[in-house]
Image (tube, rainbow, N blue to C red; front, side, top):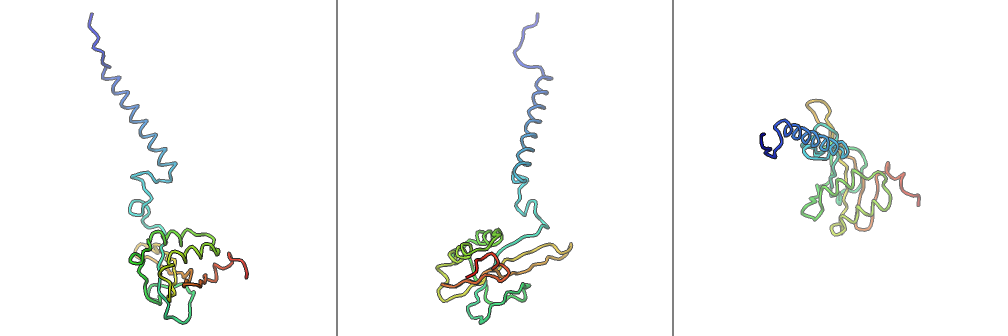
Length: 170
């Protein structure tokens, strides 16, 4: 009689490996499916999976010396005022872009929140916050539009007229 070595046969080990691998793929697939693709390497970061999709950012222009605020949607060559540097003034561009692009309803609290982001820099200055929308126009061109959203100063603010329907009447 042959002595039992106590180890599984190669066929049993192979079955276990296949089952384990299948289980890993099922778990991985469920994680990707239930997290909107936000499970590495299927990330929603643009460099991985969002190329060619529309995008939105924020831009701030110093319009202190401009006598009249224009609320027209513009192209880059039509912008007016002076670009306002965010990072040197302690404002995270990603936070600002998220604040501007993800706000669905602009009310007094949201405008005040935006004004507070710039509070230390507003003395004697007027800043116009743009939402910058970009999209792939065709295979060779990107269309970028600059939409003014909020004009802010130290003690004043003005919301784009098309967005004021969310504010209560005075």
